Image 1 (tube, rainbow, N blue to C red):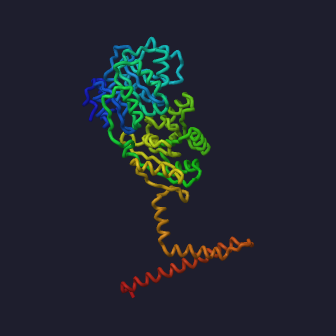
Image 2 (spheres, helix red, strand yellow):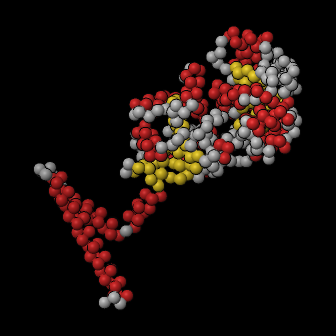
Image 3 (cartoon, rainbow, N blue to C red):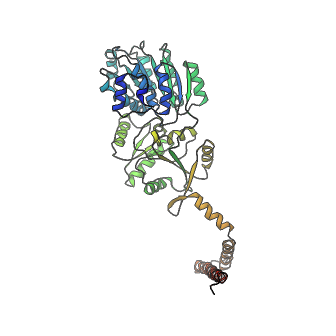
Amino acid sequence: MKFSSFNLKTKLVAALDELGYKNASAIQEIVIPKALKGRSLIVKSMTGSGKSHCFIIPILNNLKLDNKNAQSIIISPTRELARQTYLFFKQFEPYFEGLNVKLLIGGHQQKDDEVLKNNPPHIIIATPKRANDILVLESFIKLGCVKTVVLDEVDMMMDMGYFNDIDQLLKRLKDIQIMSFSASYPNKVIHLLKKYMPVDEIISLDDNITNDNVTHFAIDIKHQDKNEMVYKFIDKFNPYGLIIFCSLKSDVNVVYNYLIEHKIKCGMLHGDLSQRERKNMMKMFKNNDFHIMVCSDMASRGLDLDNISDVLNYDLPNNEEFYFHRAGRVGRMNKKGNCYSFYNVDSVDKITNLEKNKITFTYLVYKNNDFISSLKVKKERKNNRLDPEIIELNKNIKIAKSKATTKKVKPNYKKKVKVAINEVKRKYKKEKIKKEIKKQLKKKYQQGDF
């Protein structure tokens, strides 16, 4: 369905077309008509399905540029996601003369906030804490004309403890449209949203929170050094755009430093970095200064990074929903992608639980300095177990080794053991050749070649 099919302003349709947004995604087809009518919605749709434009387009369409007051507020859980949404809106400034969009995140100086009194923006994009500080505690901006509030990645904001900040803001607003968006909604989040916001409709596109464009791999690394495995993974698969996810910020630093020491260009992103550092990392990644980013889970939500071909889970998160958000960094907007996960016997239960949640894994194992199909290894083991000749060979090797080994260690005992084992293998090979010759002779006889 084309955006021109919606009841949108002509200049908005023209702007979307020039910016390359021609056809609406499935979730956009459902949400945009309802959002244009001012309905309050809880929207659940898989990562990468185009949720951001479900609220950006209706907000721009319903905006009154001649009203020099704040009309819409978008709350995002992280600075990176807030900045990304801000840049989406900034794309439309050339097409909407006088459009004023303001980003409120940590790190901005106080004097910048005071400017808001004299020049209030039409649209405010903010993190929860900053929104509470500027809009509620300091009251720099009049909120009487606000008609729409968007809670983006709302479940993450709840998990991060921002509900009180959001609640304080919502109490200041009356008769507004509230829309919340996320790829997953735990029951406790749904209950809270229903309690504090008017809900006209809950929209859930489907039950899958990863899409069919993502191929999932589980790699058994057999308790080998994880950092070395990351290095070997990069060397083997050579991804053109890779995000490595770690559950702990300390692990992000360790992996980043290990790769730098091994001459691999990469960046890192986690909450302990300063705003300037995080901004620079994002800028360098988007400029292709490096194509590998080591991240904590803060980067798994909402960030739309171009040219990501692969995700590697350094470890599996304890919260299964984080897995889906990590995997959602690839396979966005009909692009293909891969999600790889390291595991071993200690974390195999997490793989099993993900399979119960409709994730189909292709299994790999690190063996003989390579990542190979786990099915191949299992087949080899199965064949070895079922082959009587192999069983007999192993039995004879064990006997020969036992005979060559004495309780009292003597000189060259290792060499004697090795000679004994090799003799068993030699006899096995000789007998195998004899059997093969007899087999071929029998075949020729049956075919009448004699």
